[in-house]
Amino acid sequence: MNTRTDVVFLSHGGGPLPLLGDPGHQSMVDQLTTLAATLPKPQAIVVISAHWEESAPTITAGSQPPLIYDYHGFPAEAYEIQYPCPGEPELANRVYGALELAGLSPRLDDERGFDHGVFVPLKLMYPAADVPVVQLSLVSSLDAATHLSIGRALRHLEYDNLLVIGSGFSFHNMGAFFAPNTPEVQASNQAFEDWLAQTCCDSNLTETERYQRLVNWESAPHARFCHPREEHLLPLHVCYGLANGPSNVRIAATILGKQSGMFHWGAVPSS
Image 1 (spheres, rainbow, N blue to C red):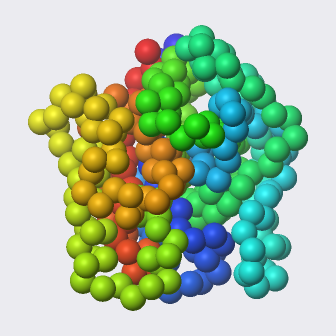
Image 2: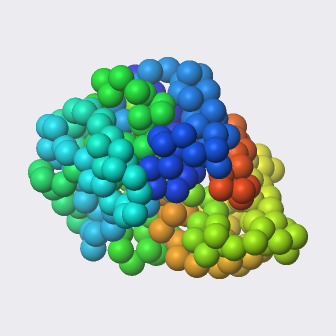
């Protein structure tokens, strides 16, 4: 079967704020709506969100998953957001099969809904909620190589015109979002963004070099300042594991005053 897969890592912002008109997210909103307009409309979407961790990779398998409002302290309207996209049980089973073939011991979950790492960016990108969606969890070990392996396993997924989204954040230090944005903080933020851009986009790197940089991401400049905990970075590892090549588009956005990056790998063939 001749298949097409687009792969995107995006920075999804702070909770529901991108949907509430927050000015600190306008750059992100503009970039995601523009990105969606440039992509072929997918037949289905697989989202790896930073907000779901399980002991083994787990896949939503319900036909109409509910929304999970997994944030606190926002206005009432944040808990009334709707995004009634369907699930896609057939695709969920194909994801399961690809991960099982790779020995990753996946699971299917018929009950779990979509968290805000799924419905916030998708409501911006595909507001009609007419594209079926499957969510794939992170693995709670937060091991970089494991998530690269998940992506590699997805190369064997056959599904025509699929969009795979890694929904995380290239900068995710919660304390820094609410502290003064000093020149030192800005420099640390920019140094990691520059490293990430080179890692994902530099065509002079071999794929072995790119893989090793992502496995050893903690060695990057100011890595642990930008990611005290790595769950918002690891969706990128899944994306690269699938794409197995340099990103052809980097999208820069300023989110809550911090430099953030998104990456698109276009038309990735299945193995």
